Image (cartoon, rainbow, N blue to C red; front, top):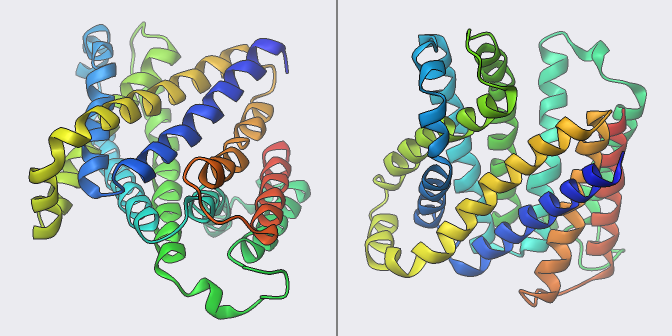
Length: 301
């Protein structure tokens, strides 16, 4: 991996963990993530102008894929908001970031593509499971099932399900978008996909938020104070995605980009402890380190 690629990926990892810290500290609510999503659309809306011809050639199937991807993205944000509202970011963030790999792997085997997964990746998945088991413990000898029976861990897993869902659907959607005849570059197509997915995510978040009077009342009362941090988070989310796309254009092997990107996991946990003043423990740091190693093994495999 060359220096430019490494720097870009490290910047992306810092930005990803930073917007999660901002979300946790500002207001981990559905309304906040709704404003964040709208912010991403606003910041990156110019891409719609430059890809108007591309959009006109998109099939109904692709629009349906985007609708489904938006639903999974909304589930991810809701899971993240509820996990952050009920527990520590230094536990919820690593779980939400690492468990999608386990879910996607299971889906890969279910659709008959298990042979595509290497032994190194399977070893990494096993390491991730070990790290996830250690992460919620207060002490090393505290291996009890009750430690995992809490709302924060449950919602972190829901966020992971959302991530796995939109990742699986996005793979299908991006392949369909690549086949649409147009002169737009792959980078522009990816940004267009990001903005359109955010549009559908905002639709689902609004729909889901309207089913909860508490969420709607909180949003109406606090949206002005949440607007600035939400717009910053929305910019960071879109920029993170764009930087990764740019890094991939410089990388000789994309797997190294994916691996180094997992640097956001220990960074997020460290920010949770030192910025949000969350309680630190040896098992937490050990679990995060093991998760990080497992994710690198998966990406390299």
